[in-house]
Amino acid sequence: MGRLFGTDGVRGRANADLSPELALSVAVAAAQVLLERDRSHAPVAVVGRDPRASGEMLEGAVVAGLTSAGANVVRVGVLPTPAVAYLTGALGADVGVMLSASHNPMPDNGIKLFAAGGHKLPDDVEDSIEAHIAEGLTAPRPSGARIGRVRDDAGGADKYVEHLLSSTGQALDGLKVVVDCAHGAASRVAPLTYERAGAMVVAISADPDGLNINDDCGSNHLAKLQRAVVEHGADLGIAHDGDADRCMAVTATGDDIDGDQIMAILALAMRDAGALTENTLVATVMSNLGLKLAMADAGIRLLETKVGDRYVLEELRARKLALGGEQSGHIVMPAYATTGDGLLTALHLMARMATTGRSLADLATAVRRLPQVLINVQVGDRMVGSTAAPVLDAVKEVEAELGGTGRVLLRPSGTEPLVRVMVEAGTHETAQDAAERIAATVRTASPA
Image: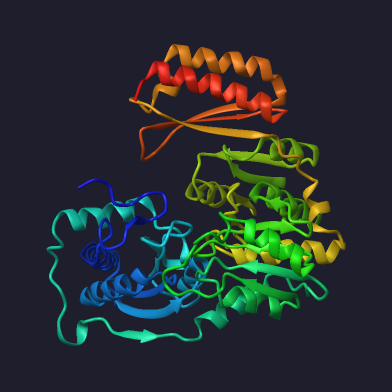
């Protein structure tokens, strides 16, 4: 059996790679691992999902698996991933389970697990769960009164919304926002949250039918939101993905604002409020060089991690820092959330607009995004970017040409036979030319 857990849980095509049998096995194993660690009480699990049709099937399997192993289940229904993480902590649960494939298309689904307190599951616990599954789940099952019970918590959404609103204390009166809910998990709670904060809200892509999640909408497809913001004369637009752990934005004139720019706006706001611990922001190596330059100008240190929100989270927790995230709009504010939270991010972004009286476009000028070109090169050896002399020489040549006005990043895909060649430069033409030259060298060094 290959490794089940990726950087964001177990994911695959529902009813194929991610079958009900696998979902049941993961749930049984998770409950058994928890019982091994603490037999003082029956573990409690919070279970939520996004509105994908397959989530109904997988939820049944997960609940059956957990209860069959002696865990009690609190079902919270369709809610964003960060809501499930929050409720795991707020309800004192031992584990949280979210069924979602985030921004992926509808046929996919996933199982995200949270430890007590709503934190990402540690690697050693994931390893133990996988070991239990590989061994065939041989531990004895409870019977009689020791079988787990299930209850529904219809108030979970309200608890989550109250938590979000308490994080800023800033009324958004006078702001008009269009929110694209991606026909996903935030279709009800995102418009409700922003309205209760005082904003005038126009909701689009907020009618999930189980099949339309992320379909030409949400944080990965901004065109509809850009049109709607202009048509409605809104001050800004907010786009979430299917499980609402991401936030992208759009200015009043329809220009897109990515995670790097949002992080810069929030970092400056937190610095001004004395809340940016060690005057430090955490981002991945994929963040635009423009963010690094802007933070340096503002006297803010930028720490870079490997690509993946779990690495940002690890750095934030290890150093007890206050803000981090990814260019994709997955932004973490540990004072209020244990994982990326798109609604929390949007509230704090709009609060900055309200307190300063500045437009989103004006606030975003803090970062001048350098043109960025990314080419995925199919290869025979994914490590060619760090081992082949011709490739290393090509990279050095481009870096010498760019000097301090750009950068080069070669990154092997974690799941495919690809090398990702990324170049940033002062102009798109320069970045494109450099990326194509390096990509050609990579292809020659390791043909697919």
